[in-house]
Length: 294
Image 1 (cartoon, rainbow, N blue to C red):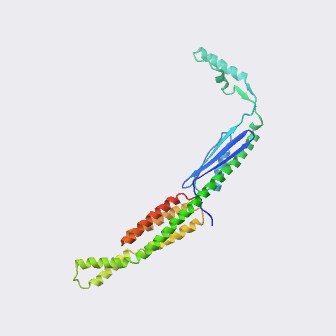
Image 2 (cartoon, helix red, strand yellow):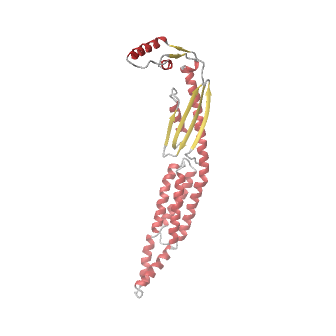
Image 3 (spheres, rainbow, N blue to C red):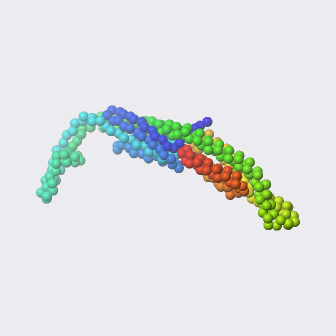
């Protein structure tokens, strides 16, 4: 038997290669469908596609956020000033200073684009960056695997809770069946009492009471609702054995509640009404838990 999974979870994995190191965190919360959001370091453009493809392969529902934080250790590469570019900036600064502008500082000049050049080392070329990106993709998969395991753990905790509510619905349905069998007699007695109060000496009263009571009992017949509730219980158990079941269970909760509402509206006894109200409360509790099922 397959186990259901939840939609809330967290996964993390760390990686490093050369002077690069990174951390991947994957989180998910409930969602009607699957949405994968990605945020990663600049310059590693294919990782977003990797995250979405891997997320779709491993997960079925939920809002998933994948975040990669990467940093690079100082490589010891040499820096030099591009004199030609600097001279152009200085000439422009001198012209602006003559018009009243504040003269630039040394650190301000060095921060200008093209003034300071860092010699490229092996880790900066396209091939080396592609190798780092491939390593990050492996770590990303590991983080998503950890997220899936976390969601599976949530599903393992959800299973007995969901099963318990389904068992309670089955038990209450059986109680309703027993109580419903007494509805016809209860309706007949109630109607006979009222008729006797209104017309105690009317001839043929017993026959009319019986016919009217039978008509009322037909309107109050809840056997179809109880049969459907029993069928829904069986369907819910089947769905738990065939995950992912979240969407179908969502729909089934609506059907459960529809039958419980009809049962309450047709009830002719206080006891049956009480069972119907308890059924509705349990179904609502089950619906809240089903919202967490993938």
